[in-house]
Structures are given as structure tokens and as C-alpha cells.
Image (tube, rainbow, N blue to C red; front, side, top):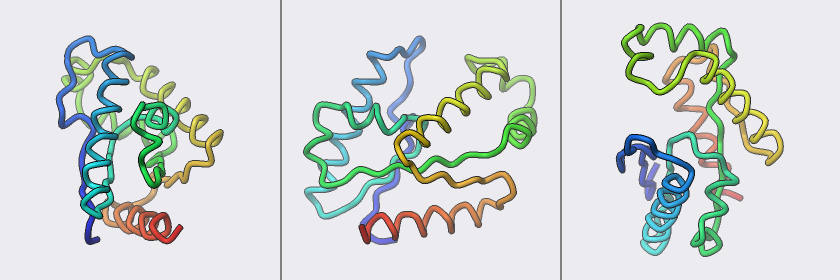
Length: 144
């Protein structure tokens, strides 16, 4: 893919106790970065857990030529296995328990359905297959 900047939402750092106000500021910061890329004729892919509705609420979002979202998802059985594979120390470092992650995943699915967001089910896909699906989605979105 050419003319595509790829970022992870958390690369800006997530402070301890990050709340909704911080998330709104961070969303605005990312939208401004996207506007900088747009001015250079580039698209930006932002990986993270920010719902589409929250990004669209950023004050600068109306200045974007387009905004699209895609949810990389998996079934709960796969999610549980993947989270447990990270080991108990991961849960100790993270801010949540297993049910929290399952509830958040269901909320993101619901949000995606309500806003007609493309969902890629990664449950049975390899990392390479997920990348191929994501690349195909990007091409289709660019064509729109």
C-alpha cells in the first residue's frame, strides 16, 4: 500500500487512569494527524479500540475528506484462548478481568452493527490472512 501511514492509537502513550476526557483529547490529536496526512495526499490507518462514533465526534473530524472503520473481531472462545495465552501476568498488568474484555468486545460489535462498520472475523484466520482481508478493505474504502 502506498501513501498510507499506519499508527497504533496507544503509541502516544496512555496515562494511568486515562478517562473519557483524555480519550476525547487523544481522538482529536489523532484526527489532526490524519488531517496533516490528508494535506500531504496520504491516508492514515489508526489501529486501536476507538469506536467510530467517538472519532466522528472529534471537533476536527468534519474537515476529513472521509473516515471509515473496520472492526477486527473474533468469537468469544477464541478471544478467551488468546487472552489466556498471554499468561496470568498480563492480566495482572492490565486493568481488567476476562469478563471486562468480553463485554467490551460485545459492545464494539454492537457499535459496529449500528454504524454499518465492516467486521473481519479473525477467529480462524492466520495473521497473514487478516492482513490480506484488511488490505482488501482498505482498497475498497479508497475506491469509495
